[in-house]
Image 1: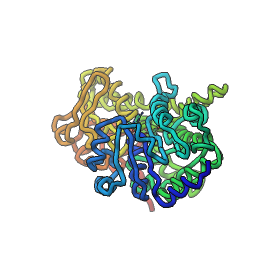
Image 2: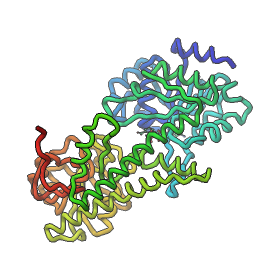
Image 3: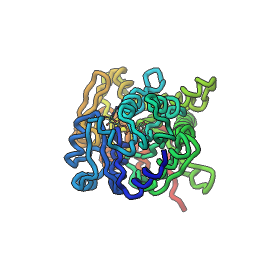
Image 4: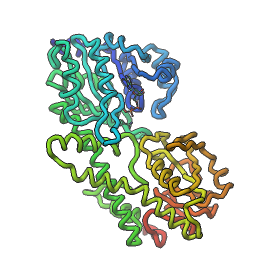
Length: 445
Ligand SMILES: NC(=O)c1ccc[n+]([C@@H]2O[C@H](COP(=O)([O-])OP(=O)(O)OC[C@H]3O[C@@H](n4cnc5c(N)ncnc54)[C@H](O)[C@@H]3O)[C@@H](O)[C@H]2O)c1
């Protein structure tokens, strides 16, 4: 099968593009394809999301509502739960979740369901791209055989590629459009087909030699982060023992103009990617008899941070002669990072769980997360001023949202455990930092 007809349809924008999974990754991608001039159909099993998109309403903070509505009104973007309509698509992008099971092995069930739907209507000339983060080998070992089951051959009758999504929700500077897109096909034609599609929609495409390389690129990127965050979290624990301020050390080290990149300690890893993806890699490597020691070690250190935070809470309460049991502890920020409402794998949940186990009464403030469930407990966010009016025994800053009024918090006099160095500008006896700070850093001369 020649690539030329699909290539022409991409070039003249008559190609119809389907995106399966309209979440943090899929919706911004669908909007980008629509902006490039393609007719885009989003497919999702969640009928609420489908209805919202068709009404021009966004539910992903990175997707502007006026932007989405413009494409919907122009007929360039619509959504459906009817998978049979995949038959009409020239190109299909799969961006469904790839979580880990409790046993830390990959759960490909969402990918398998989506690929089954694609396989059911697969026709000659279609381009299928997997975007979900996964272990090296998923595209050629799992997806390819499923799509070839009815006799069509990848890279001959249809095109198949992997292209990792690198979006960073909440990042204003780097978005789907200006983050370079890695593309690796099952064969040369597939790489060219996928590169042509993305080339029409994003600023830069980086082709690589295979789907496995493309899959591994994403895992290298996320493992790099997990390992470096693990290292600075260990540094924070070490600095605490030595009464050195880890943040001051990192900020000074980052003035080195080469060979250093800053990573910061915190209450633990969060989000859909960094705590999960490296374990996809270690699971797969173990099948080849290889133990990924860095990944396991970083997992252990990062996983120990919520307990380390609880120990700082015990220190803070100890200063005012109180036990954790029966204390009212208020959490500032529960989302996994600043200025997003994403709770997936948020370390605040672990901190809350550990404190509840010790008998603490928990409340929280988070402008991005109105309600919260942790185990059998449900919570409703309190406005900060109301929380401070109730005078909790201790406040724990788990997420440094920019909307928080830090001065009011410090001035309240309530003991505060700061896991994010959010209070770096303040010196007050009620602040307990994750790692020691004897005196404010001297002004730069
Ligand atoms: N969120 C991120 O920051 C990020 C960044 C890079 C890569 N990724 C990867 O991208 C993939 C998607 O992540 P996300 O954050 O967008 O997930 P998400 O949970 O926000 O969205 C996934 C969507 O897929 C839908 N879905 C699930 N099964 C489906 C099916 N069989 N058919 C149709 N729709 C289905 C869900 O209803 C949901 O709307 C994951 O592999 C993730 O690891 C995520």
